Structure formats: C-alpha cells, structure tokens
Length: 267
Image (cartoon, rainbow, N blue to C red; front, top):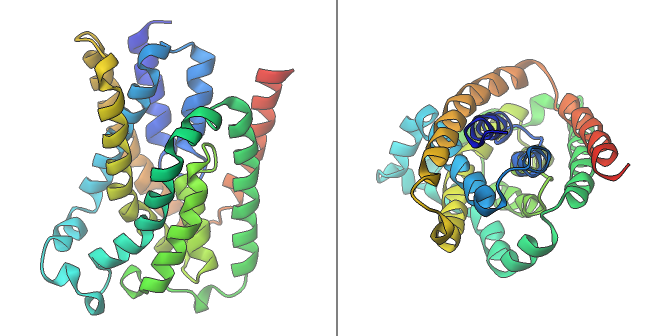
C-alpha cells in the first residue's frame, strides 16, 4: 500500500483513539502490522502523529493552559493548578524513565497488546461498577480535584505504560475510583496528557530521528495534520458522550478487538 495512504490511515487511527479509553498505541501497533508499514520509520511516525493529537487538546483547552502560566495557575487553593498536573504525571514519568528499554523490547507486540486490551476493559468495568448509583457523591468540577486525588490518578496512569492498556482508559478509570465523575475524570485526563505525552514524544524523537531522511518528512506531516484534525473532533465528541453514557461500551469494544486480533494474528 502507498506510504502516503498509510500515513492518512494511521493518522486517523491515532486521532480517533488517542483520547478514547481504547488505546491508541495498541491500535497503531495492530494497524501498522496489518498494513505492513515501513518498519524503518513506523515507530518515529507513531510518535510524531501523537504530537498532532496533543496540539488538538492544547487548542481545546487553550484558556486553561494559558492560566497555568499565570501566578494563579500555581496556587493550589485557586482551582486546578500546575501542582495538580505535576502530581498526576510524576509517578508515570519516573517509572517510564527506568523501564523505557524493557517496555520497548518486550511489550510492543500484538500478543501483549491483546492482553492489555482485556485487562483495561476489566478495569473500566470495575470502575463503573464501583461508582454505580453514587454519581452525586463524585467530584463534578475539575477545579475541585485535590492533590491527593491527582496523585492517585497518576499511580493508575502507570498502567498505561503497558501498550494496549490505554493512557486515557487507566486515568479515567482511576479518576472514577478516587471519586471523580466521568466528565471531570476525562477533562483531567486530557489536561494531564499534554505534558506527559510531550515529554515522552520528544524523548522518543530525539532517540530515533536520526533514521529519517528528507523524503520522510512529507509522510510525517500528513500524519501529523490528520491526527490533529481527527483528535480535535474526537475529544469534543467523547465529552458529549460521557454526559449521557457510561464507559461500558468501550470496555466491550476492547474485548471484541482483542478477540479479533487474536484470531487475525494467531489463528
């Protein structure tokens, strides 16, 4: 298949899945294997399109991110602050720093993704079960999140280092389990994704960008723009979805996808 068409397809997959609790990394590993994406640039491409998805969130929450650069944005008693974001990112960053090589060598493959898809589905269903019938007791405003809650969400986010588990899935489920409503957990998840993904993507690019040649940047640009546009609308749709529905449908989708992948790759 033409590499430019593959770039569009993978960009769409990234944009659709990055902020939904279904694992963008897992989907990209599976799709890249199915399409036979050029292994030389596949990993760098996957990282680069994630930057497009990050940019879409910055656009959606631009007022919030602007506030983080003001004095008020550093004051814990003034609502969601830089410290809340730091509390949710530091645990996973520390673990990722020490396990980076192990994760890249042993966890990036179809079978490990299949296991993670099922495990993440179980966590989503458990989180929904634990919060069923007590929605009024959950935090309904992102500015009411405590540092302790943010930290525990960061602990849950460590699960996202397992490709296929889903960063948004682990953090939203974690948010529910520490007392946030679905929508507030999603808002926090999107906000905390930006510094985390930016650091992770930048680190990956610095380590691998030397393998690219001039012609590769056209493919990267196509994927970047595609992921940005699709992710922008995906986030807005997801927030509206959570206003009316639970996360259970995403859990069922994950199980079905795991079953399909097992059939495709191993039967």
